[in-house]
Image 1 (cartoon, rainbow, N blue to C red):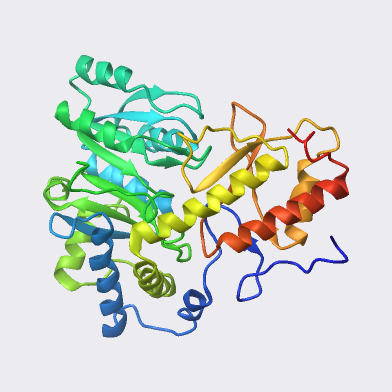
Image 2 (image 1 turned 135 degrees about the vertical axis):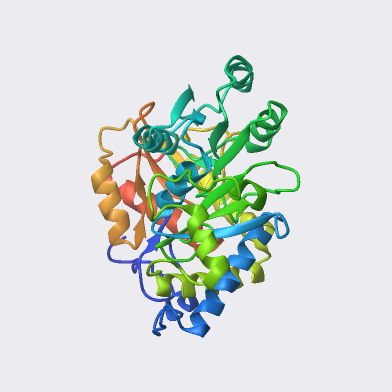
Length: 381
């Protein structure tokens, strides 16, 4: 491989990121960041407003929802959502089947909010009958927190069914849709929730630095005084935009301008349907190709989201993950280590500015690397 194959690169000459984000971005997204704007400049303020106005359209929530951007990574947005929407005397039922549910629990612990936990293994979706029973048994639970796609494993959680259950019990739903937003359908006309958190560097294919919460206007109006921090106060952040159209504190200007460009690419591709279709094709090619090489997926197809795929480590003693990882990186592909407790594994992402040919070329490289390592293609399983 080293003699015959040139390293794969993006259109700007960078390695291809087969990760859950940050991810490979287009040349146009990168080029959008080569200029400078003042944070109070009218041009930038207009670009930021366009971003804020566009995002609720992704969930068909133009009339009922408002975007509240939050400087920082996606976790900033999740913490802002939890500590702004849950009142001081509130209690959250946290649905956990991976690291991001665990992170939400930790946020709530630090914020001093009441917590109940429903936890399943990383390869299992929540037990809705048990969730139903927990809600029925504890009237103090005011909110439920769910992760749409848990990138620890790549599992797709049933947010539609969870939302229906939460609504039937008269509670409030908060969704972490970090790795799902823009690729997996979430229709606010059919799925009832108070807020959803996501970020710029996932399926919209921007760069890291901006989180955002798309909040139901009526629910956001009830959050005044809930926040435990000044910076992460969504009610105050939104009030500032309503008064001035500007951020309270310095925004990540270049990130926002790139995100504006990314949204234009997103709609040009067909929005959620178009982007989700490309990712699904990427995932299909990846899974089928890796299985042909002898790898086994953690999840069955019924639980697998087309965002990131977890593979079991091969049992072949010749397989050394760090050597595998380094060889792929040298060939121009960056994958992701595993994050599971239930299995020794690694992960490969299907999102970003990647297409079917990129996935096929990656698989050919994996085959070459396995041969170089002396790992039998079928014995790798």
